[in-house]
Image 1 (cartoon, rainbow, N blue to C red):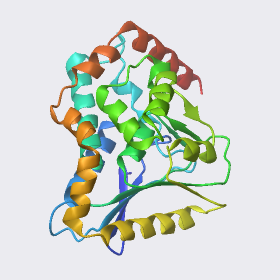
Image 2 (cartoon, helix red, strand yellow):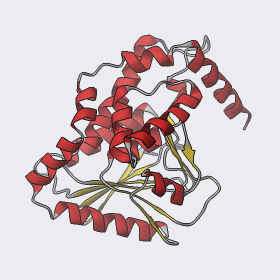
Image 3 (tube, rainbow, N blue to C red):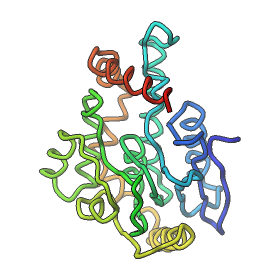
Length: 265
């Protein structure tokens, strides 16, 4: 099965994450998303909006692929491979956040860490009010021993309701446990009462069409201007900040524990 399933709804390109049970950001998923976003941003694509969704019933995306980050003796990873993986992820973040084509994310189920990063990169994030025990959303990197890079702080400030809230919640590695709480802090732009997945997609497409109706160049410049700090931090392509932390004992210890617990399930 393809890591990303594509479909067209008129001029809207729907990208459904379909990489295993939790949509971990595996190299094939990252590559597929990056390629689709790049193609949609070409002049003759005919795409006026990109809709991110999930083919998994209980998860949007669980975030970075732990198998790419472990440097235990049993793995084949080293600094070079980890740096390559993080570089590809950062390139995807830059492409999605800087997309000239309007973007939206329909969030349901679990959406921690890298899943929240993907949603934050879009122009509009929406979820249903229907409470699910498995829902979560937030940047919980610190809880697994990973210091958020500078670009992630900038991304959080661009999305959350204030710089102070962003500072506190990123330090805490806080995960919201409901769509309503996520909306309260700014993780989401809207929560639609009792909405089905189909109703959420229809709402998101309506928002994409509103954005696409704005004079294109003016809207793009406004978007890039608002995200200038975050995009500039990513443009240098430096992965050392994240890789140093990933290779550290603190993160590797937590990763080993997480992978061991996952194998027992």
